[in-house]
Image 1 (cartoon, protein in one colour):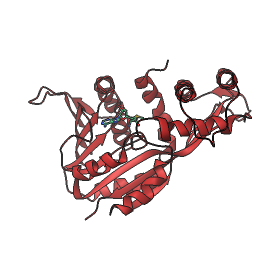
Image 2 (cartoon, rainbow, N blue to C red):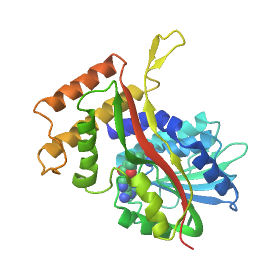
Image 3 (cartoon, rainbow, N blue to C red):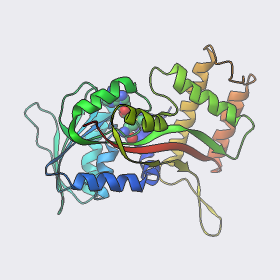
Image 4 (cartoon, rainbow, N blue to C red):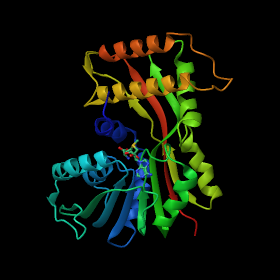
Length: 311
Ligand SMILES: C[S@@+](CC[C@H](N)C(=O)[O-])C[C@H]1O[C@@H](n2cnc3c(N)ncnc32)[C@H](O)[C@@H]1O
């Protein structure tokens, strides 16, 4: 089994390629226009890859207070190990003073930017704050939006920003094609919509009407599809999957298989065509073999959204 923290670590380069640069540029410009220090709250920060990315890509304004929250204590424990290393790798000098509650605060300085980072275990929709920006990356598709949206609004300054990149939007495809791919995809998405306790398979586009309906302004939105494929040199010789992305695909196949296994014991939507017995195992075996032979290609559809709360 791929551990969730390892999955988040190997997901980083997939997200790096996927993030919609137009939406990110607007987010960075909006942050730049705010007065210092800029306060950012990240909900569902996982192991802290977004902090590291924004620092490494020079996306942060001069002075930033960055509060990263996740309800999973193992992820925050990993973040406390990895974020200082990543920030140092990005050219920051990092100090680790303890705050008055004994929590780890990192003080990271580069020639242009000073970031104070706190990494905290909490339910991000229960905390209190007053933030210039809330980031929720690959999070809004797995939570209850009815609870999340008012909570995020309550965390933001009146003219604050919600940046919600990598929000799943209904597309899970593999190549080479297999006759049961479409059925597998529909079942996997049905699991997100009807079996999982919260979230859904089309939350990306849902945000585009739910936010305006609730009085938010969507400033930018755009696709951020995941594309994972083995690389080839100019000569056509394969050079394998980049970084840890083979592990990313292993984790993803496990997730899909787990969802389908759970569906098997549930009442199904009558529109879902059954898989004949053994098909799920055959499909998984085939995909694992293709991964082993470095032939498997995976594409998923996500959306990035930047929005401002109601006035
Ligand atoms: C798919 S992961 C994404 C993690 C990270 N944003 C990334 O992209 O690498 C979703 C994360 O949201 C966290 N999460 C879900 N609901 C949460 C909540 N109510 N409060 C805080 N974290 C939450 C999970 O623990 C998990 O780490």
